[in-house]
Length: 103
Image 1 (cartoon, rainbow, N blue to C red):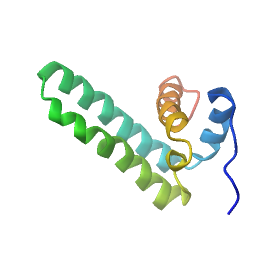
Image 2 (image 1 turned 180 degrees about the vertical axis):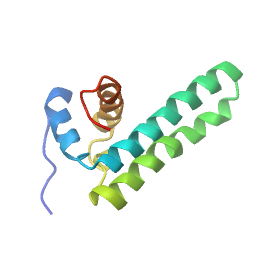
Image 3 (image 1 turned 135 degrees about the horizontal axis):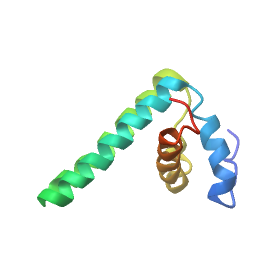
C-alpha cells in the first residue's frame, strides 16, 4: 500500500478532492448530505435540542460514503484527510451552488 499524498495546503488538496468526486451521483449525494447537515445544525441551534448534534455525522457522511462506495467506487478522502475533506465538502457545496462544479 502506498503512503498517502502530502498536501501543504487546502488549495493543493482541493483539485485532488474534486477528482475523487468525478461521478455526478456521488456529488449529488454529497450535496444532499451537506444540505441536511446545514439544516439540522440550524434547527438544533434554533430549538436548543442539543442531542441532535449527534446525528450530524450520520447525515453528512452517510450520504457521502454511499456515493463513494456505490458510485465512485473509491475510498472516501475523509479516511486519510479528515479536516481537508470536511472543508472540501463545504467548498464543493459552495461551488455547486455557484455553478462552478456541476450537479
